[in-house]
Image (cartoon, rainbow, N blue to C red):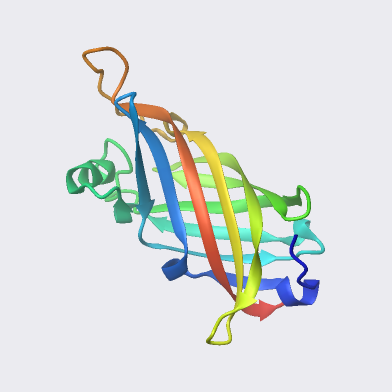
Length: 186
């Protein structure tokens, strides 16, 4: 349970990419998982702890910054088989609603656009706290995850395995670990 007063927390924030992670986990060859992240992203949000419905978030992710720690796989993910980063350089998310789900839990629904396809996604976030860093910045933290079907955004490439099954699972877990710096008090 976090005890920060609303005036301390409520405000407009910018995601600090140096202290945040936006990642994903996908099943590989039916037996293991591949973890990846995006190294370039930016986002802003308004967080109103008293009136969560007044909160909002926007996020832009550079598709070409995908990083799975394997250069061949990363190149394939950037290709037209997956993100088609040359034609669609940005993945975007824009919230359409925010609601409180308990003491530190929030449900954020919004439009996720990947490869020219926009679909609604709901993500459950946990508010992890607020603090003032050594440089005097007010920080706020959130963690979240959500499961999506990559085929809903036209990411349909796959390869059949000799023993049965496919190389890449359809379900992808999205992961968010966010530290944001307050820009203004609201």
